Length: 408
Image 1 (cartoon, rainbow, N blue to C red):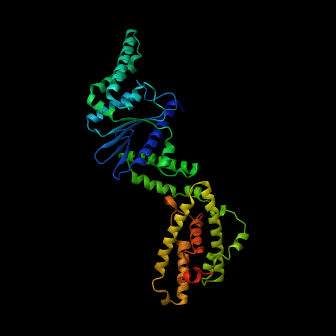
Image 2: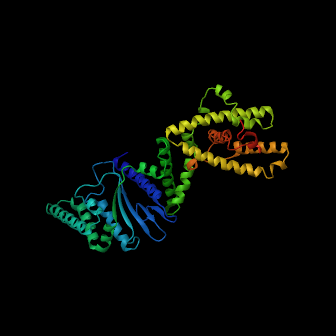
Image 3: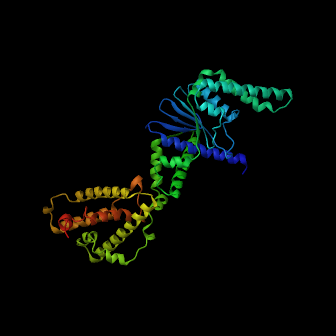
């Protein structure tokens, strides 16, 4: 692959990275971004363009895309002037020049422009124009054809100075943006800094891929590449619920090993007694108890493991337990319609079995940030419920308080 192709592809990717960052920053419900509509990337409200951004990427660290006589710089300024004149932009539009390299140099035009002092900027531009005109004259005197590039730059500089009202408006609203660590910035805005790097990379790459593929699909169908923040939120939720991401947070149950003697050590725990009180077939009860003990032990191991990795905190697990408790309460109350004394003992036992199966086997919930559980890691959900029943703050049998609360 030649250098030109590498530059084009890297610039293309950088543009979508910037689009993702601007999309993360949107706070108003009806605002949205566009890609390749009015500029490389833009932010819109219902009635105006709020931000118009030009994105330049380079692998050459010492070379700026916004040099004083860069054709890219003057083409950008020329386009912005034209779009102000045709009312695509207005006096509230913010104009941003962004690159992945450092572009701030003492005395450089782009540095002077960012200070938003029109008279100082204008004097610098006139100086640049004069120097370019002298260079062009020297080339012509020598009969050289090297003045073509300089001539184009001179034309664009002159155009901007001739349209002073619009040009002044741009320079009053221009910003220079050195976006050196764009992935880290996006990760921070998505609030996933506590995840490990593999998870962060997967989420970031997924969202960039979504923007690229969605834009392609829209363009293919003659539509503009427009995206609202709600679309990003939906995609982010789907992303963090994917098995690749979830499994990267919580290990699969089969991956967690422990000493089998721990099973016997847990058989006197209150959560086991809460299951043992249920009147069901002996073989089924043994299965329920052994599965519950295994989930309880592996939950405790994984809780410490995840907290130690820094993905989540103990407070996150406590919040999840509170959520589980509220959902248990909804199930419990939906099954126990009448007063307890209005049921027979057999009916109460049937309700207890229904509550246990509903909550432990069928109940679906999500962890913080919308993480969903699958068959391999639902022991986290079950372990939280078993921990609650071990305190006890919840129970399966309608008489659980009478049987177990404050009962040694």
